[in-house]
Image (cartoon, rainbow, N blue to C red; front, side, top):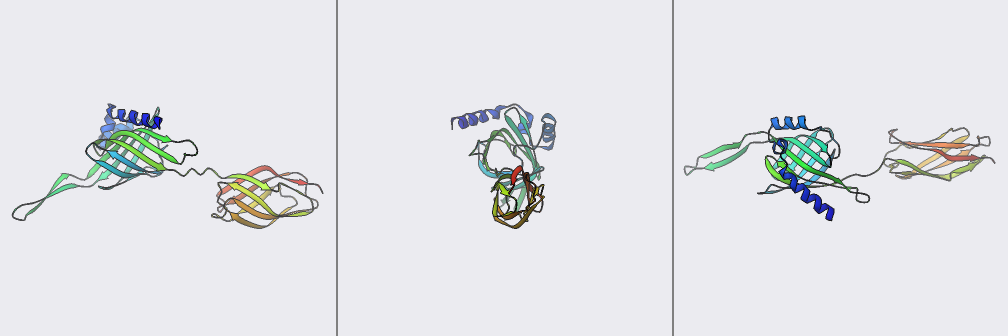
Length: 269
């Protein structure tokens, strides 16, 4: 908690950073920012942040959606804005800038003679959102939480930002174990079980199993009992070579493969 408070205070200090990009609100400044920073799309790619924005005169609660590629969507109490985004890392800071399309802002007045006048306060065009600050990732077991803290500009207004996201931290699929992990020649093992880690066997069929080499081994009755467990029968021929076998499991129409070297041992009778 103390560290979070320190970061918040430091982020407030960022409001005084003398950089043209932080106050940019037009296309020229957006292009100048691109020239000054090495932009990339890492750290906050393809995420949705719930963001509190303090502009001094108003508090906003928006959703910032960073789509893969460069699409940026703001869902705001004042309407929705769509545009493009870029980010750059500098030491411990992340600089983020987005260019969004903004609609006409108008005022309506009615005179005593019931005549209505609509006057454009600000024409439709483009505007920018800029943040200097931190994208914070927490250690396990809180690694599904992410925070964005910083200062900058929100549609031309100097602002302080505090954002929160929940990430999908599911790791890559891995081979876990096979039980039993050995068998004798001229036997049939029933309900052999393979366990996976971060796998989706049940959600993403079909599942296929291969022993390498497969000499003298026959697989039958494959069933997926859960996303992480497969059961099958294994027949070991009388003349199956006595050696270690590697195992490969393929699922999700061939898009996902897990394997383990020397996972199963054929023993002599």
